Image (cartoon, rainbow, N blue to C red; front, side):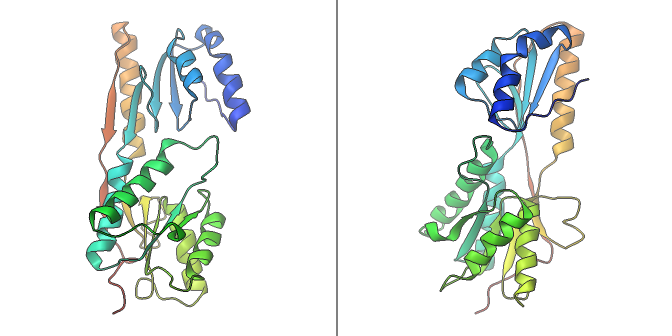
Length: 244
């Protein structure tokens, strides 16, 4: 097994350009959360390797990923059912060339939930958190500095949700009485900080990709697979009804 890190567009392009030479060292390739341009996906698809993607999907390549749109809808619907109507979104990097489908699919779930409830999406409530604690903290400060701040925040990752929670505590806000917060992933620390989240199962995705690879090697064939991993709302102590 070879583990190759691809940090940035240049490294990704070099990796894809050399993919045919990898056939002499490996038989199967698993791409984890790597966004490919159309020409790069075609080169990977036409290579001599069997390829499985985790997190993203491309025509002609096997893929396994969580249902990110449904996961986001679970989170936002939970806040709506509690009575929140002004819900901030802390999303990923908007102009990141390495950005995966995860960010825009989770944003799409947020928009779908609000729209289905008859709520007009306020673009001022969408802030980029760059998938980092620090980025989420800065985004949360911007949201809370609004003349009419949100009563709840949906962060598209648990790490960013923890960053948002830290800002709320720093500013003397009670969570969830003054501000409800929900994330996605069920990070190992989420239970420690009692974070409401949407659980996905990365180990299950990895195990499924590995199982497909083994089956292909054992049967000496290349089968096209596709699977969406279901998600589950986990309600803890960071969400509650808004103040009347």
